[in-house]
Length: 279
Image (spheres, rainbow, N blue to C red):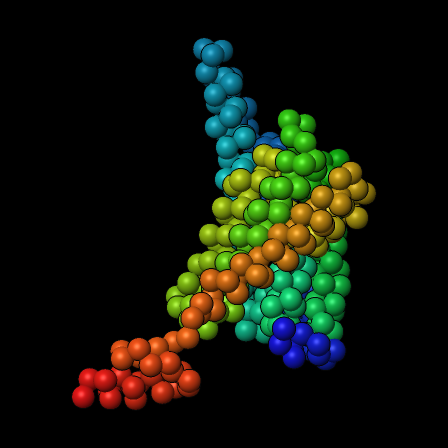
């Protein structure tokens, strides 16, 4: 583990950026989940009334409500994290997730002091975002986007799903934002792909957390704590497992060699050795 991981230094600018970014991220993501889960547009009502064939009505409901809910919510979280990455990525690294922060701590890319401060800021920002949604929406009975295990699934299903999707999240974060060999062009698109893919899978199962702070804000403001531990344990386990997987694929398995098979002691000498081998 790098020496950085043992640093107790805290950059307050990073902390403020994480808090504000998390508040906006939770407001946008859970706001989409809340509002699209209960459409009130008269267009839906009028269209439903026009359907004379009752066999088509269930299909209509699936298309206009269930499908749009899942797609819009997944895109909202995905686009929300992209916007945050572009806005505060250069300030704090745009963790916006205790699971991501824990994985970066374990890989030596975040000091323990900064990690603790970031996690506190993320949870605080999530609460602010949920409070803003509480003041904006009259659908407070819906839980403000709080995560819960679906009736058709078990707690074990949800835990495993959270572990797998958080593993993907932290693994890709490391390979795109941390790995020095990653092409810069992937850094902006990765958050959208991760957010959309993870939420597309887990929304029907448990609303998709993969982020303990995202679950904490709505749970606290809406007082919905059932199975809350699932959305803490699952993401943290997934984040921990992602670190050895990242090192496994990002570090060379054997010594780097030149064209003649000689071990390269200093990577900076690669260019010089290529010239020599060509001669």
